Picture 1 (spheres, rainbow, N blue to C red):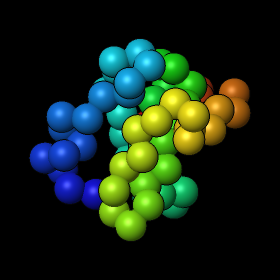
Picture 2 (tube, rainbow, N blue to C red):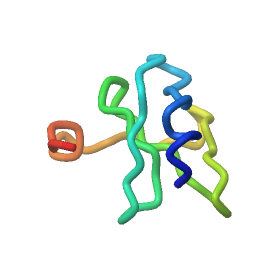
Picture 3 (cartoon, helix red, strand yellow):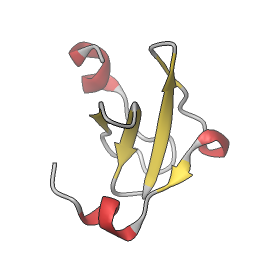
Length: 62
């Protein structure tokens, strides 16, 4: 994931910064508890496409 892009992306729900998870190929927002998929290197920042984080994922350190 491009660092410059990651620096400007925010969660559309909470407006909080997101972090990239390479293992799941998702952008994670711990504030809203959502994970947005990255498909073909394009972040899909739609709430309807996001999955809800588990409690463990939400509490996990960066």
